[in-house]
Every structure is written in structure tokens, then in C-alpha cells.
Image (tube, rainbow, N blue to C red; front, side):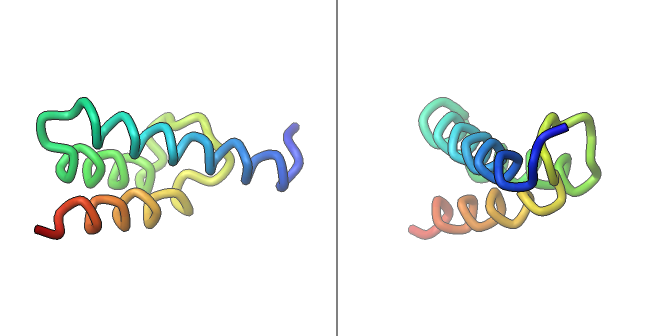
Length: 68
């Protein structure tokens, strides 16, 4: 079992990788991040310590990317 600190670091890395991948390779990065955030809120098989806690980070990134 992972310690809470290591889970947080791993979750932060997962969030960073997800945001980066969406920003650079998704056709619709905002939509992609919103869908991934919804999947994390629903705890749909995401391999991380606290999926619902990661959802706001992905939603926040989507909001930043959506600013024109």
C-alpha cells in the first residue's frame, strides 16, 4: 500500500501528464480534460490514490486552456 505522501506525488504526476497530453495532442483539449475529470469523479478505473480529488485539477486546467 502506498503512503499518502507518495500517493499525492504520483497523483500530481498523473495530473501533470494528463494535462500535458491533452494540451499538446488532443483535438479538443478542453473537452478531453472535462471528460477525464468526469471519469475521475465517477472513479472509472483510474489508477491513482484519490481520483475524485484530481478532478478539480483537470477542470481547472480545462478552464485555463479555454480562456481566449
